[in-house]
Image (cartoon, rainbow over the protein chains, first blue to last red):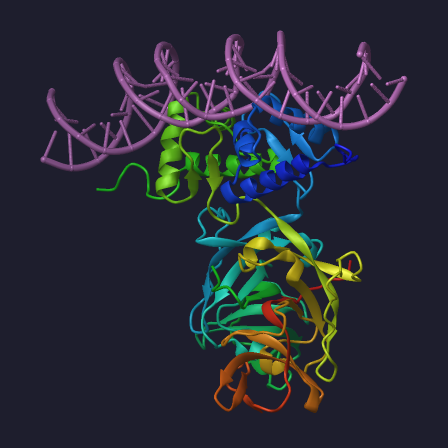
Length: 225
Length: 225
DNA sequence: ATAATACTCGAACATGCGTTCTTCGTCAAG
DNA sequence: CTTGACGAAGAACGCATGTTCGAGTATTAT
């Protein structure tokens, strides 16, 4: 009849690859040979092993011999260029910004967000980045909504003109996100929304720059489970 | 009074978590108890097991008992998988929305954005997603700025109440991003900015729903390389 | 038909790896 | 001091899991 098998991937190869992927994403680790057999209606472990060897020769998977569940998909980049940014807390207009301590690790964080490096400034140092969840509508003048995630970079209190920074104004008990401009008589804090007026800060009024905003993420449809 | 160790993560807990993560991303699968012990200078498997139990109780990891390497980090998707979303074009208030054809692949796109799956609705089908870059300030009432990237999902012209959708209004030659509500006399398009008034669309006025907005990304500091 | 592959099966084998038990030292509370 | 919780170690146990082998059945080529 039909040729038993054309070149390339056969039906079983695909089935196995599909199961490998789904198991990995479902369980967080690869399946055993026997589990693969069960899922793909192959009764013998040696047959699974047979196909696994072929998939490895084709370069589709990588196998660590002798060790349990030592299968990993080569594609779906093992070294994806992205990293977790710890969510240090929430940012509210009337409270100081929670800035992570230097020995802060993301394991202490309530959660973290995954961000691809390609979306971030090229020279960003991972350790300097942290994220805050916006609480309330008070950042609307910065075009930032309740629930948005703001990715920030520690700058050690410095800021350059034109950068969007998170500022804490001690005398006003106010946190705000604005574009920063140093001027002769003090500072100008310009809202992102062009229809709104800037705030002028006198030279003697204290002003703490907590970080530079590098990215804003808004997940609109996060209710779906 | 106080326990010997402060509550929370001890030094060894962190060390183990760190190793779990690095091993996972390096090898593609979790380590064994013995490997953990070696990497963290714990000589006994039972001690590793001891800490693993604690980490599980704290909710930091998940364990599948009895099975090899059955450890997975709970926070932030164990598998670092992300994918490229094609940027189909630009979205302008006065022009129809460029929607990719069904046979569209991201290889055809001028560019693409990398987004972690953990940031997207879990049931998202990769094929249904595409992205648009916002051109101009006309989406300000949707809290979306010039240059923002809007990730959308094709819905086949359908929309549910409360979803943010991209709508094309043929009679007005207008594209807009609004929250969608079906009402008795027609439709209500509610801006994301709560200070702005909704648009009411009569039952007979045509209205094309081009997609559902699932995410907005704003890269503020696109430093030139 | 015969040989040569490709594929399949089941079973035995060896060991990887999670689990459990016993023992020991330290520190805080009673 | 005694007790008990906590942290740590090492060894033994036993199932889970990768590996190997011998044999059987299609499919294709010669």
